[in-house]
Image (cartoon, rainbow, N blue to C red):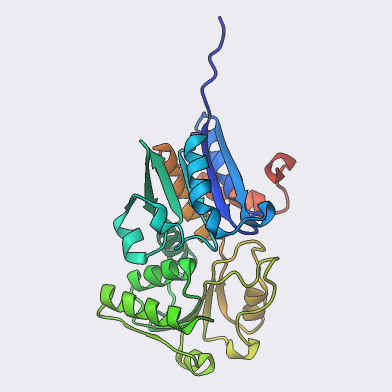
Length: 295
């Protein structure tokens, strides 16, 4: 009797400088644990010499190649929206997409980032003071983290970005969604940090390609909690410095895992085992990962 091999499910990740991403390994390992073949490809704009202008062609190629979906990361989370057919309520409210489901010739945009950050924050900083927080970054990831922390009950949020207009737009749009909270954009980070109980960092600063700190170290103190979105490296310069200054910290690993949990469900139609995915992520980041996970 000849065994019939099932056609593998296929998905991918579009972004810049993503060769170190652990998302493919997390998806494929969970697929294997559930007993089905799952191919997950990196579509690295930097490696291919492409820009976000290539998004329409890349989306079409993914459809032609039979991919079930695509994860979207920096710098394409907002730029991909005009090329989609439908948006989930959360993606529409956030104006950012990190997960695109390709089905029946249509493209459905979702956002699992916000839930991923919220779930990570609930678990990692369960008793954090939510009176006031500063967020650095108002791009695609920043929209999700701000939405998440406000959903968790933050009362005051001050947003900073290298593009002041983008920070202002985020503050104004979130004020409509969360009328009971005070949300504003500001250019004086030092003053905002003096009264804040926490800091959310939502830019690529700290990644290998973007080394450094997003703010002056002296602005951090023991009264702050610090939540990071970067997960490679898992301990960024920001988190190292914050811990030295007595701050409680949350790395970007939880957000990475839980956004992947949401995306896996959307791509495959199956419910993943979140605890199993967390254990796999821990193995990948502990230095004990098998060589096949590096490919």
